[in-house]
Amino acid sequence: MGFQMVNAELILVAATTDKATLLRVISNVELAKADAQLRRLATAQGFEAAAGTLLALTSPQGDVTQWLVGAPAADADPFTLGAISSKLPAGTYRFEKAPEHAHLVALGWALELYKYDPFRPSKAKLVRLVLPNGVDAKAVQREADAAFLARDLINAPANFMGPDELQSASRKLAKAHGAKLSVTTGAKLAKQFPLIHIVGAASPRSPRLIDFTWGNARHAKVTLVGKGVCFDTGGLDIKPSAGMLIMKKDMGGAANVLALAQMIMAAHLSVRLRVLIPAVENAIAGNAFRPGDVFKTRKGLTVEIGNTDAEGRLVLCEALALADEEKPDLLIDMATLTGAARVALGPDLPPFYTDDAAFATRLSHHATSSNDPLWQLPLWKPYFAMIESPLADLNNAGQGGFAGSITAALFLKRFVEHAKTYAHFDIFGWTPMSKPGRPKGGEAQALRACFGAIAERFAK
Picture 1 (cartoon, one colour):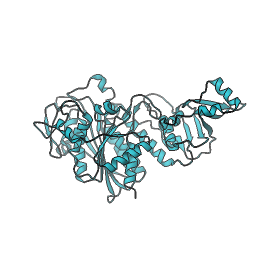
Picture 2 (cartoon, helix red, strand yellow):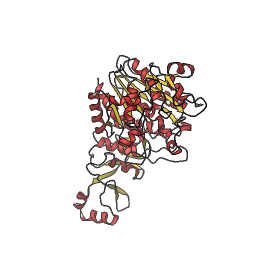
Picture 3 (cartoon, one colour):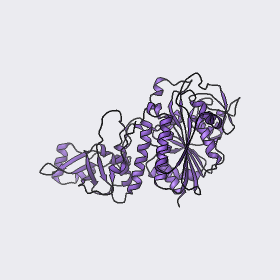
Picture 4 (cartoon, helix red, strand yellow):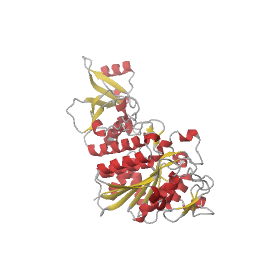
């Protein structure tokens, strides 16, 4: 089944021959100083210029000539003003004056209009915005389209988004940008990446490692690794039924990595890009891996299974080991990895981990400027004792239940030795309650922050 992705180019236009209806942003202070006729109309309609409220101004013939838009507070989410797009009727609109944070307002306009509904008849409402002066049309469209891709992949039910379909989505993206893709499966996978094979062995949908490269081999090497667990039952340490309800999103790391790769390739950044996605389904059968099992990884380290529901780090560590072998300039992984991250920071603020202080500063700067929130947590080495094992080099779950996101990051860090910079993102990939520019469902996280930091670091 195809996805119902709205192309941002249809929503955001740099110029148009269509007549655009004006949007006049007005605060309650400005409304109080407006002419008496406008104040009377506002009072009659109950319009108080609150954030995101709308009031249509009409001609004597009844045609809408302008919309008054309540101004958001100075500290409001920058997407708030753009999120009026879902409240307006179909048509083309233009702000009377370029709003503050015009780029983010335009992006919020597009992101608010996203809808995933391919299983019943529906028709998207086309609400177009003429981009304010100074907004880079290609940049904002690139950001919106990447977010739509990530959301589409995550929102797809697991019976429509297994390892095969994730491979197809990767191949489609690679082909569109002239990237070279290979896939490792079967006996070769079991030999070269044993934990990817072991985690996915109980599913009839075979596990695999998706690998594609793009760009000039002489440029700086940027490698992205995304957790592609297309559905997670928890394995033999089975999740409760409530815990499985949104486990279709457990491939959110892969979805976000593909979306970030799309941004990088569409912008023609001067990097040699590599994307690695271990794609599996963590299912239950007679050949499922068990708590207490011990396995040897690609890197040679041995891992004791403390919990089969901590499978994400098992598939990621194999891909990270492969990535690290070619000593990339920058190695990033994204994964819907731990509930501990959500307990600590909630669904909207993913933690990231890196030992590179300069890169962390870049990320934090771009997270703020692009309205893509992130928060750095420490790779606190004393906590490594929590994931030690009496039988193996590592335990995948550890002891005590403390600092779960940090210990998961420390586990992954053991498989990275040679990359010049390594960063791990423990994302949620989901919006549980709709917010401006962020409808409930699958969500893109860390894309704009990472893209900005990568573009800055590897600028020509």
